[in-house]
Amino acid sequence: MTSTENTTAHDFWHLHIMLWQASGLSQASYCRQQALHTHQFSYWKRKFLADHEPVDPEPKAGFARVQVAADVAKLSSPGLSLSFRDGTRLTGIAQNNMALIKQLIEVLR
Image (cartoon, rainbow, N blue to C red; front, side, top):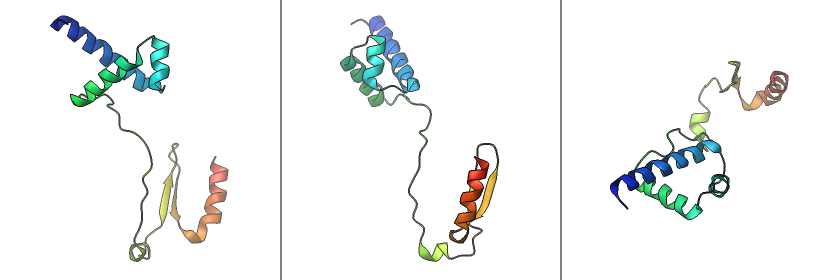
């Protein structure tokens, strides 16, 4: 493969990997939809990861498990707060007011 062909292949696969990530499809589904060979797709994806090219520039959203030490939890904290997408914020959430918080959440939905 010549240098020009290699650059063209590099750009081609890099574009497809970025489009695949934005699509939300599985690799197999994306490859079927685009008539690509899955083994070639996997090869180039591994190659980009090995070259440390940013294949996924956006961080993943998610949850993390947090464990609070008992003595920290007993400090006089204002409790938890909950922020909604529309800017509404509930503060002072504690074990002793969960029933009220559940009712408020139902009203705000």
